[in-house]
Length: 282
Image 1 (cartoon, helix red, strand yellow):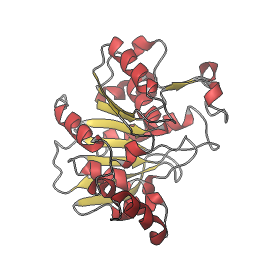
Image 2 (cartoon, one colour):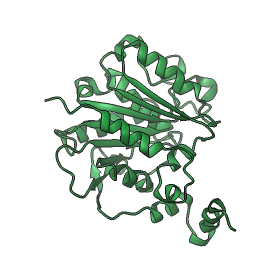
Image 3 (cartoon, helix red, strand yellow):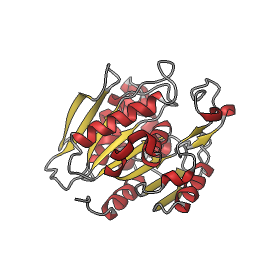
Image 4 (cartoon, one colour):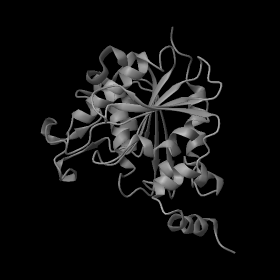
């Protein structure tokens, strides 16, 4: 009998498209409306796509999802396979683009993320609980915006939570050969502020990490969990045995879950965490 894993792999060359294209093409879109290319800033990279589930009322939260790609690649149109499953949880989902290296370096992409979030808070997120979420490089952006008050200023108070999937939350120049963070203090990338006491008042965090991730080690999530808890921030963390760096975001995709290949209940854990968030403060 052909295994489900082999069946999925065999479909890639037949489809004649990339893995992202395949995931998007196989992800059901019924019941979710897409509004593409909403501007939040200048240029083509200053836009976001908005996914709205059918029947979403004012109590539905808004998730702003930042994709990964090492701050060098990525496009909002490639992430319907993430946005639609998140929308199936009853949330509106915004997927912004942001400037990439070499067009920009740190802090340019974080500033773009802040502009996108501020636009979302005033637009589709007005009156809603707003949650920031990201994978890999996108998790760095999401958590930096949630934890470091210099990026959003008073607008940070409008956040209900933040979710990081396999985020590289701190690393030095030895892990940054392109010098993307060369302008950061000591050329060191940090999602957290200095001093860490500035994190106080940040929203609850959900940190998800694969134990088999060889791109971003699990210690990244473990260290951030401890640092945030020390500042009184509510943190829920999940370490998934056997799950790697790409597997943690692929686990959200409908075709992967349909075939039983997700390896961890990532979408379920996100949904349960969202359900436990308190109502939006008046």
